[in-house]
Amino acid sequence: MNASAALKSTTWRSASTVWRIWGAGPPVILLHGGYGSWTHWLRTIPALTGKYTVLVPDMPGFGDSENPTLDNALEAIPGALLGGLETLIDINHGINIVGFSFGTVMAGQLAKLMNEVHPGKLLSLTFIAPAGLGFVTRSFEDLTRPRPDMSIAERREMHRKNLGIVMISDTSKITDETIDLQFDNAARARVYGKPYSRSDALLRACAGLPLPQVDAIWGSKDSYALRNEPDYSVSVKALHPDIRVHHIDGAGHWVQYEKPQQLNSVLLDCLETR
Image (cartoon, rainbow, N blue to C red; front, side, top):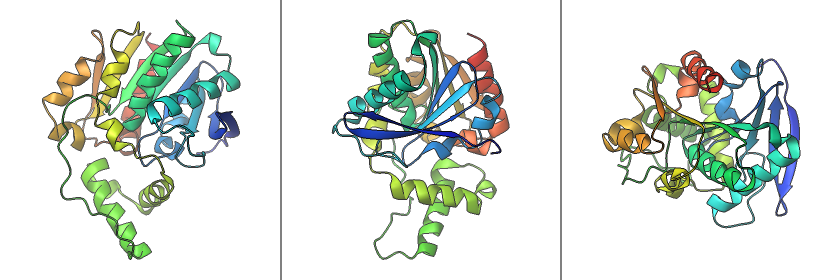
C-alpha cells in the first residue's frame, strides 16, 4: 500500500479501539474476520480510497486495540464501533458497512444498533463470506492445532497448512507475507470468534430491520460454504428478501486477499449501485 493511514484511537467504556483511515468521500467501514486485524483488508483498501473515506478498525480484542470491557462481544464490539464512528465522522451523512466472516456478525449487530440510534443513516450493508447463519457447521477435522512447545518454524508451517485448508483455495498464493500476516494476527487475537460465527447472530440481527441494499459475496471454493451446503446458501438468502448474491470464481474463504481484483470490482459495484 502506497498511502499511509491516519492512525486514530477512540474510547468506549474505558477501552480504546485503534482505527486506520484513508481517502475522502462517503464513509465505508471494513470489519475484519476472526483471528484477524485491519490487515485482512490490505488488498481491498487501495481500491476504495479514491472514492471513499475508508475506516478500518482493529476491533476490540484484536490487533492493536484493547480488550473489550464487556464479556458479550455482540454488545461490546458494535458499541465500541458506533462510538468510534460518532467520534471520527459526521454520521448524519450515512455509512456503508462491509464485514468479512466473523466481521459480518459484527456488521449485522452494528447495523441493528445504527437503526436504533441513527435510523436511516445506514447506506449499504455488504457481507463477505458471511457467518452467524444459524445452522450447525461442519468442523475442520484436519487442522493442525498449536502446541506450547512448537518452534517458530513449526508454527509457520502450521499456519501454512491451515490457511490452505480454511482460508485460501490456491495454495500457491500462500506466501511468506501471507504467513506473516496470519502469524501476527493469530498471536494478538484475544476474542474467540467461533461461538459467534457458529451462532444465528447475523440472522437475528437482520430480522425485521429496515435495511437498505444488502449484498453477500463469497468465493466459489470457500471451504466453509462448500462443506455446509445447501444450508449456507439458503441461510444467506434468508438475511434479506432482496439480497444480491455474488460469487467470486475460484476463490476461497479469504476472498479479498486471494482474488483482490475480482472482489474489489464486485465490492465497488455494490457500493455504487444503491
